[in-house]
Length: 355
Ligand code: SF4
Ligand code: SF4
Image 1 (cartoon, rainbow, N blue to C red):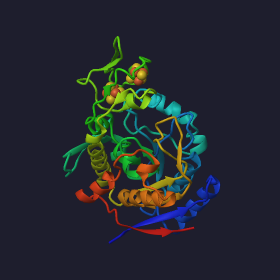
Image 2 (cartoon, rainbow, N blue to C red; image 1 turned 60 degrees about the vertical axis):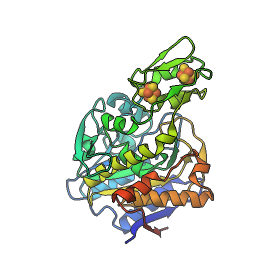
Image 3 (cartoon, rainbow, N blue to C red; image 1 turned 90 degrees about the vertical axis):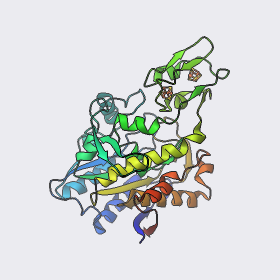
């Protein structure tokens, strides 16, 4: 049986006020939040973006979702987890300050923000899983404890996952620091000595202090490196080499199993909103913004696998190109294909276009 996926198209450039009003109407008329019970603590998981980049989901959409949750007598709150890499989202205090600076304070959303993995990203619950890679995954504790989960995800390209949307937001975004490290640890980078200018940026941003500055170039201690990829992301001189070929598949499968761990604890208590607007080559953790396709709309499903499968198809159909031609030229279907293989969700969907 096919999984139901709702699709609300938008014109480009998106008119957020109009799109938000239409989204609200669809949620109410199709009773999409009826699974929320009185007194449910409802986590609304999103991404607050990076300063300087404007692609992240606007607070007005979150405010609307919070109002609808309160209409069901639930208690909504916004939530996020800390990043592995250093920066203004690496601990709860910095991350909260950042979220407020980005406009996600109560004055704009009507909700408090509760960081899901505590002050340092180490508040976690280990959840059992019949995976092929993991028998258990380490998830942010508030995600596990919340009575219901609303995933609000932004479709973007991604340099290792191929694309990021609901599955990536759940798998990586709902994991504790250890859970994130478990997913990233397959890849270990090397410095290309001739390309390195010794600018020091990778030394500054490495979360594990695994990089020191040598006489000719930066040097990575692979025994300390956790394979998070942050040095690759910050190097402006293409001086960090990753053996991606060996790792795309593993990373995407690991993300999928972590997302499965999240979903298993939220049976009939989960809904995913995928925003296919302001889509860029890189994820919202990056400060660059290279649009890859015009605005498309919002995809909604109770099943993150179906939501992502439909989102990917909509992007490729709209662009008339494969995602590997739009963003990074890497394999990008492992998240969806592997979900099918392990019996997580249903990538076969029925698209219901509502306007
Ligand atoms: S960021 Fe790149 S160029 Fe700068 S020190 Fe690190 S590897 Fe070298
Ligand atoms: S050296 Fe390893 S731990 Fe440090 S930023 Fe690079 S990938 Fe991450």
